[in-house]
Every structure is written in C-alpha cells, then in structure tokens.
Image 1 (cartoon, rainbow, N blue to C red):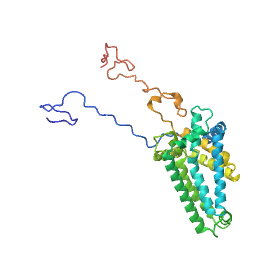
Image 2: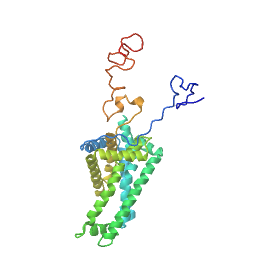
Image 3: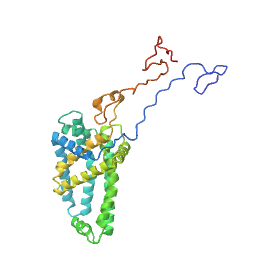
Length: 333
C-alpha cells in the first residue's frame, strides 16, 4: 500500500485517511548562547561599591581573610623575586588576572545575602570550592595564559627598546618610566591597555554567571560579558577605572590596603553582575515577583487579552464562548 509524506497508509483510491497526523515528541529547548543584559547608567558603579561595602560589613571574616591572603601572596612574591624585575612583574600580573576567580567564594557570600541570609560566612565561601566546578578552573587557566602573554609582550618591548638593560624594579623606573627622551613608557601603557581591555570585557561578569547559572558554559559566560560591556560601554569603562584605582591604592600602602580592597571589589562585582545580567528562572517560578529583583514587575501569564472574535468564540470580548448554547461557536461565525 502506498504511503503519503506524513507516513500514513493511503487507501486504494490514493486519498489519505482522516484524522490528525501522528504526534512527535517536542524538541528540547535550546540553550541561549548569550544571556540577556540590560543597559545601566554611568552612576551605577558607585551603587555597586556601596552594596559591596554593605556585604563586607555584614560578613567581615570571609572577606578579610581573602584580602589577607592576597596581601600575603604579594609579600611572598616580592620576597621571592627580590631584584628580579620580570619575575615580580609576572607574579603581580598573574595575581591581578586570576584574582577574580579566587574571589568566587565572596560572590557566593553576596549571593547568600541577596537571598535573605543575614550573616553568611566562611561556610558559604568554602562550599563553592567543595563543588570542584571544572568551568572555574578552565576560566582561571585562560586568564593565566592571558597574563603570561602580557608578561612576554611587555618583556619583549622593554628589553628591545629600553636605553639600558632592565633587570631590577629600579632599572624599570629609571630607564623606562623616568627617561626624558623616550616614549617607551607611554607605548608600554598603550600596549597594556590594549591587552587588558579584552580580558576585562571577557571576565567582568563571566565568573559570577558561571557561579549563578550551573548550565552556562565558559563560552556563554564570556559572550555575555562582552554583551554587557557593549550595552553600557561608558559605565563599564568607569567600573574598570575604579577597579584599577582602588587596586593601585591597595598596592601603594605596602599591599596592606588589599586586605580591604580585594573583598570590597569582589562583593561589588557580584552586584555589578546582578544589575547588568537579566535573571532567568524556570517557567514555574516566572510569576513570582520576588524572584525578579532587578527586572521589574512580571507581566501576567498569557499577555493582554484579545477583544476581537476568535475561532470558537462569539462576537463578545474575552476568551470565552459566545452567547450561543454549548461550547461550540456562537453566532459570530
């Protein structure tokens, strides 16, 4: 017996039997490559710092321990490198790039506070690392490669164009920074900005997204981070400038300031993520207003009601049947 395109048996006359075609299982929903982001005003970074400071005050132990670890690492790097400028530069560059991954525990502390837990502490920060999330490790490795690339580029530039050899930190200050007849320091800063900008754009909200959305991949997190920067370029430029300024202040105080600066910026970075990336929830929870702290009121399910006649309805407004008896169509059809 012949078969039609819907794989149904045809009768001898060639016509398909009546009835609906065979049902097929629904396709699973595809994951979005980029999370929805919103444009934010240029004043928002100051609000992120204010909220980050509130988180640090509410959970000081976890934050200050992270800051103390950063300070001790800096001191150890200076002591080990001693007068070896490029070893010191590599250690500090790697620290600045990998620090956002190390601060993941503090993101979890801020997330716990946002969920209503008044005083989260070390238990919440440590729980992130007990999960052994390989995505965080992969992202940290990528940042480490970026730091290595910057150190190699910087060493090649300075070694090739400095008036005298640069082997110690004092040599860099005298022969590069304070050299009167050379633009090497300015060129070095431009190269640093060109290499740091894409790293910042790739990571400004990526790690927070990986923590918050377990189904997100590293690529999705990076693309979302870029989308956030492109949506609010002036705001993100100010945020990057504030991060650099506060970090420089922390280092200028013999690294002691990092005890406070590191956790403060970590908590603030979580609020930057929550402000910029739109929260996405399962359909069962989508009607709960409390679940959308950043995205405003939730519209009613089904959207606005139609006022025109539809199939199976009479001329009256609303989704119900017309004035005719029974569930069939009213006199409007």
